[in-house]
Length: 57
Image 1 (cartoon, rainbow, N blue to C red):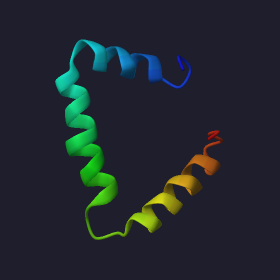
Image 2 (image 1 turned 180 degrees about the horizontal axis):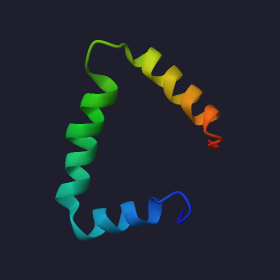
Image 3 (image 1 turned 90 degrees about the vertical axis):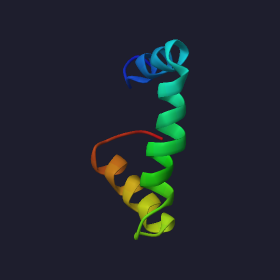
Image 4 (image 1 turned 90 degrees about the horizontal axis):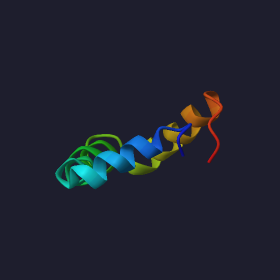
């Protein structure tokens, strides 16, 4: 988790739950589930980017 930066993200959420709430319910929801581009295309692009950058999932 530390290598991927997830530990810091969890720490922020533990210390400032309003930031975590904003991230998931405002930012993330708007970027990935709203807008002109359909969700399927966004998911395919995310997979392509992760593969391009050598991320494991």
